[in-house]
Amino acid sequence: MLILGRREKEDIYIGSDIRISIESISKGMVKIGIDAPKDVVVLRGELKESIEDANKKASSAKDEESIKDISRFLQDA
Image 1 (spheres, rainbow, N blue to C red):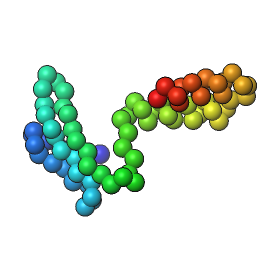
Image 2: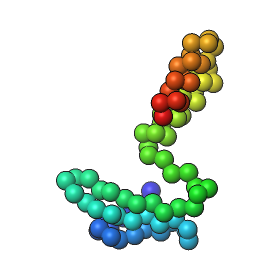
Image 3: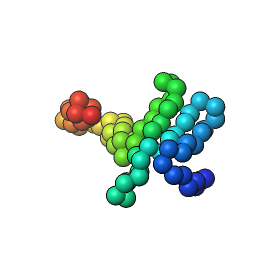
Image 4: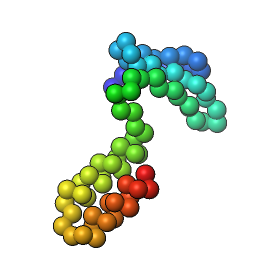
């Protein structure tokens, strides 16, 4: 893992087509901007984990109620 220190309005580039910018830092929170091609999926960590959990649950679902639960979850997302 590469760890970089950045200040507001400074950028980080990944390859030639992904730019991460530090938009603001306030009250212990950092707001970042991500500029990436449309074919690159960008997800918050908690959303990625939630999707992975739903996928695991769906792959092991054995009854109709479990499938309904997953359907409701996806509609709410």
